[in-house]
Length: 197
Ligand code: SAH
Ligand code: MG
Image 1 (cartoon, rainbow, N blue to C red):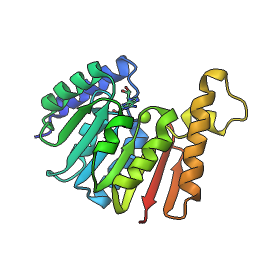
Image 2 (cartoon, protein in one colour):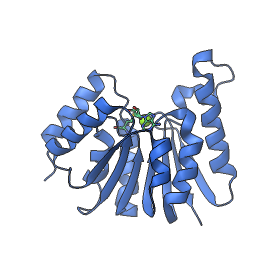
Image 3 (cartoon, rainbow, N blue to C red):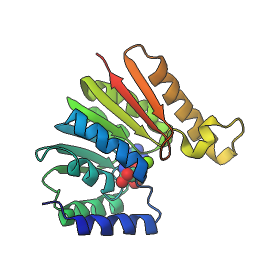
Image 4 (spheres, rainbow, N blue to C red):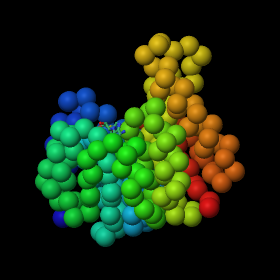
């Protein structure tokens, strides 16, 4: 059983602790996608404390499996506790470590890949995502518009590297003939890419 009360506590705690969980309008769109795609296997890059992973289980079929990767050990520990409290621990498999190193050790086929971690690694995550997704599957990427910085001509030094990498990601998903992409200005920007192999 999905424990709604524990889920709300997790959401509140995450927001209070400034953990960048998916925004409500992004979640609404993801819910729509899950209800139409009916995925059996989901790969998530960037677990944080397990909020989005719990959402994936909540809006998918009861036998869905979510494999999710988190670099930060403390957050991964919290995520393991949180998915237990929410009652989705049977569906969620949390891997602790750097996705850049873990992804090459995984094998397909996933129905959905959700990219929500280090922005400067999005192109690497995309490449691995394409390898691991089934033909016709979806790769979703959060934060692709990065508070509007990606659309802006001038950015502070601090954001420049991330912006450059996110622009590269958008260029790749829109120009690769095997990929069909929609970029939505919801939340912090969500890219939805259908992969044809
Ligand atoms: N998907 C979560 C939020 C993720 S926040 C949610 O919506 O609930 C991004 C997370 O990615 C952070 O916790 C950060 O530690 C993690 N991260 C950053 N770089 C990573 C990497 N190379 N491999 C795995 N996780 C990474
Ligand atoms: Mg995000």
